[in-house]
Amino acid sequence: MKKMFALLLISVILLTGGTGAAAADTVLPVDVSIGLPLKKSPDLRPPEPLSEIIGDLDVLPRKYLPEKNLTIQETVEAFFEQQYNSYLELKYTNVDSIVNMKKHGNKNMVKWLRMTVMRRKLILENDLGYVSTERLPYKIVFNEEPTDNRMGLWRDYLSKTNETVVHFYISGKKGEVYPPFMAVNSQHSMFFKKIDGVWKIQMHYFPGSSRTFSDIGPIPMPTEGKMLSDLKKEFTGVKSPKPPELPDDVRQYDPKKAVRYAMMFTEKPNSQFYRLGDWIGDCMNFVSQCVWAGFDGGDSMTTNWRVGTAAWANVNNFWHYITGSHGGLHGQQLSGINALRPGDIIQSRTASVRSEPQRYRHVYILVDDEKLILAQNTPSAFVYYSDLSNRDLRFVRPTYMKR
Image (cartoon, rainbow, N blue to C red; front, side, top):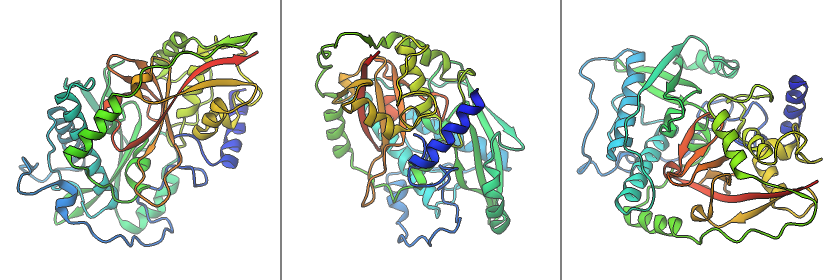
């Protein structure tokens, strides 16, 4: 039965433009526009000054310089250690000694981390929300082949570039929240090339990396003043609105049941449901399951929102269904994070840096309104709201379902 649902859903995705985490404008398999020259037009973007990528060189506090030439595995370990240090200490560390900064995706990766560090620092200093600075243990486990079919797309590219790819996943403490770039519990791939005798990272792929770094133009760096002004608006929005009046003979959403399901199945998906996997994108499928649990599970589905439909598995289709006027699932649109309570849903897209913005491509469910912890799939990990930098967001609260 699960295989039948999976095949049906893949057909729906092909017709509707992808799942949540996957790119909305490509044919499956999606989420592969990550800087690989797979018959893409040449990159005509003018080169950016290094100072625009890593910051003012005169005030840059530190730069990572390995004491010896590192192996590939040592480079992976050093990369995450430096990224994690920057994240926790709220001070960016320049890693161009091990990262090829000529690559578009890498430039955006560095800018995104600088933005995240700035965002966390300003939220903490201005007491706007919760920011964790606790270092958690993690382990990088290398594997010879990925657990999905991504290499079917990359082998031709590797044969032409002579780059070396390594695969690994990162494990951490169960139930804890790690930085987004760690994408714990999910498959990572990292591409390397030896430049002047040094192994340098050409690309880092993990669930969510393409929509964040590679599918967009150059990320513009805001000033601290501009970001602080935006943050104050973001965290001082109107409070939660009054609940809508419920029609007769409806099922009411129980957010506690939805949160309980999310806490149980975020890190290890429910085996009773099909799973497309991180390579294609499973985020909306997971959140639909949480909403379904909030309506007591079982037959709590509608004709147009059930396993195998576009409204169940696709971010934009779900939004239009839950916020539209119809006879099925109903929700209440919310204005911002201060209006949310556990069980509410957040959809995101990378902030527009091109003429046409992305469609919304990812979705979370709020599970803790004190620390603003979100549950997600693709990757199968928890994330802090304070880490959602360079994102456009929209919010909805499931309310009731007509029987």
